[in-house]
Length: 369
Image (tube, rainbow, N blue to C red; front, side, top):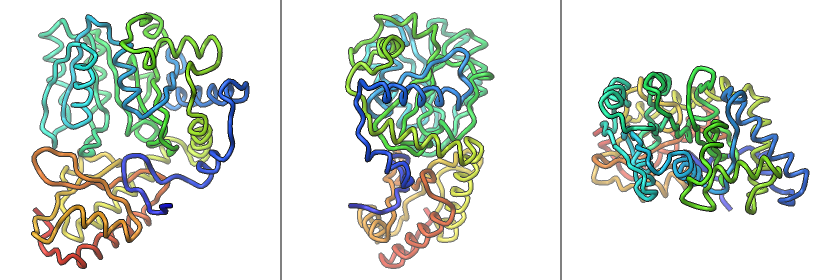
């Protein structure tokens, strides 16, 4: 059994009340569980002010299951998707589209550069075949925040469709369906809502879901069929992750009691500031400039010292009670430290102390690249 603090982008360290909710067994066809699912879906839609035009469609599995379900169901087989690419999760979207046989146009950006709305505007102006833009809001391979509102305005002005991977931003960063037009917003239970992993969900326009019947590439990942079955019966089509849904119900209750999106963002921002200040004092250099850094996960350059080895570094920090995350960049060696979960700034300061003790123990003298 592990009691280490997870400084990762999910799974996360969760509150005792959330874990306790999984001690109760639920019948998947039972009316009480159907009511539980319905209440969770209503509250997820309300978090982004999308009650008027959108429904929440839950799906078994990780967030990637929900991303694939959204792309495979909502993008017609004749569609073409523009994928701005500044990280690994953007690239995953492009790979999914390739597996689905949907045409994709990948627009590359540097890993330390936010997506530029002007380039999106130019692409949509010159390529009328593009039907959709699939954007990662917060790219957790670096921690960079892409300008969702500005990009959404450009997509809407061109009359195209927007699909948003909000996996690492939903619930913490402000998103408002009353000012942002989107066909689908995708997230999961084990991220900023601080539930446990196992349920993805898509907040999608009802008219788009209604027009997507028969488009899906898959039975299990047919979002429209899942939505229609839920509306008709109140039940999931296939065995639901009952304990995950129960835990998410408690996590959402805790989220609301603690002040909702604004309070969650404030806590994560405090966590991020404590982490950055402490790591800079040790000599570590963040990969991103502060103005591009989302308070979700921070990427740091690996020390160039020959005494540094990530495997050893990870293990020794883990022995001190903190789980870090490996880097995911292609051109420089990095590691990542998450700021989300049921943790506070004091937790991050203790983590920095553990990292500093590990650096000294390993004899690492050169820290900055």
